[in-house]
Length: 391
Image 1 (cartoon, rainbow, N blue to C red):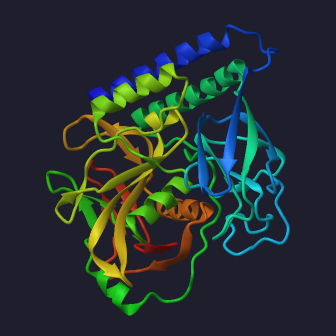
Image 2 (image 1 turned 90 degrees about the vertical axis):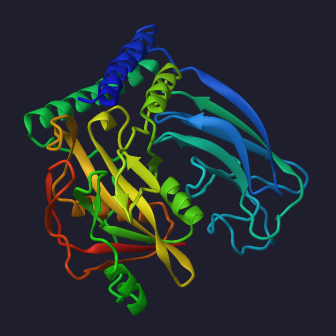
Image 3 (image 1 turned 30 degrees about the horizontal axis):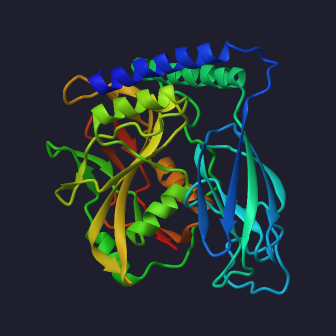
């Protein structure tokens, strides 16, 4: 195993020991500790950053009182165009659990259960003009997950990571998915792609390569939208930017261990398309288990546009364990040979995030259907490329 992978495995065990020690300091009947916060949410500001990080398992109780004519439950008679939450009254208190996640209605009071790591933003349900003048006083009680429960979760995470690791070493595919939340079925349009866009996609390379020019993963999806739209859509779909520096990754994992957070940005190797390295790498997985298993992809900006929009191409695969790197004998990640499943996972997770305008399949000339990646793993596909236009 190369040095960074071994270090991360050690950190996983170290993390587990530390957190288990924390869990054992109290009995299972002890109530989780809570923290109280107060905020003033202005009606003239789109979003108020509470600076409050959230962890999976947290429970947040939010209560609010209005000032002047502002009511956290909303006001009547105000404009209803372009509201962030269309079915809520203008002026109502709303929240986001991630920077680009879909907003949810809070109103005067609501309990929110946190399913994935995130960050709390508060705002007012307003379109082009504030529905009232003033601010909303908000109190937030954050109840962290019980240490004993957290220890049980970590046991499961570590057991899952160990199972995946051993399965990879033995050459047997581990069952189960590593996605943080199951994505719904992908919905695709049957409308044919624009002929100009088809021509540009036909001219794309079919596969990426490593630094030694060994052909590898297939290009299996296209995103159409600005860099900001791409990043917003991926953030809303709970994809995490991969670390690019191994030493930085080890430090980050150690810091998050001491802060009792989950490390979700494991480094990603460099691959090439258009004779240059990936512009971005994204990954999605359960904490700890991602050392062995994760959904991930690399993204490159193309030289052409469509309808004035930037076009990006990506290559996505699902790591399911470890295997021998045929190039040098080292240990590397083993991919699920059915790569179409990862293509669909990328598309459906983006649709779930609410940032997709349209999605279509396109079969280019000379499609990739049976091949090997740069480390020697075989894979198969129906050869289609998923084309997604973002909003």
